[in-house]
Length: 283
Image 1 (cartoon, one colour):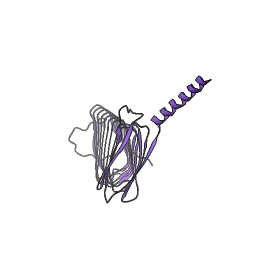
Image 2 (cartoon, helix red, strand yellow):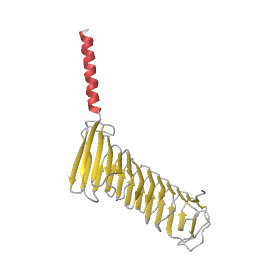
Image 3 (cartoon, helix red, strand yellow):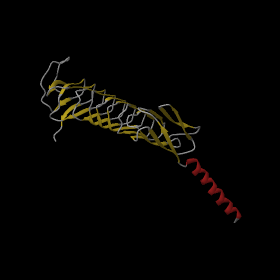
Image 4 (cartoon, one colour):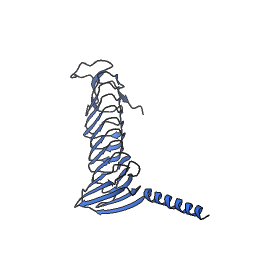
């Protein structure tokens, strides 16, 4: 009987120790900042969500999923740095930290993660995201520079206005809805590029892929100057474009060029072997 009790007690202690090693710890951080602060978060494993909050303060809630990761923080005047510091033995499971962050709308934000989702919402400052397998989401942002770089993660941009947008993706898909501004550039290796917007802002839109397909959808009233070409893939357009001279021989099914409306925005679609389709929105 005593042996069974001792065994049960040892089992309880063992599981308690395991639970302690993998328990979630919450960190609440508050920073006072001035106008146009800079916030940088480096989190190897786990999601980061950043939203616009109140002026002159940064509020951070971090959930650490084990005792094998620490949260390093520093503030130098108007700059805040947060780093998920992996301890010996940490991996993609025990090293997970989840961040929920509120920043002033005019903050410049830099996010880095290998896994998880990077999400930014309602910001008006410059935004930089870098990741390996991390998915990236930018929603309802305006007026800033948006620079995204990913290896395998998918990228989604929704309602990004009046911005300078640059996306570089190796294998992830890039989907843009309601994106417009003076400069929008997407460069993808094998991922798909999908655009659904109005090509507004009298901007420059450059979509380039190697093997991925490019699908760009615009309304009938779009005002664009279009040049599209695929070396080995098919090229299609739903629009009746006004012809213009091109720096290459325009061949039906593989390249086209032309204008629509007042040709306020420049649209360049290039692929090596992917399909290119300029679609007309029906509604």
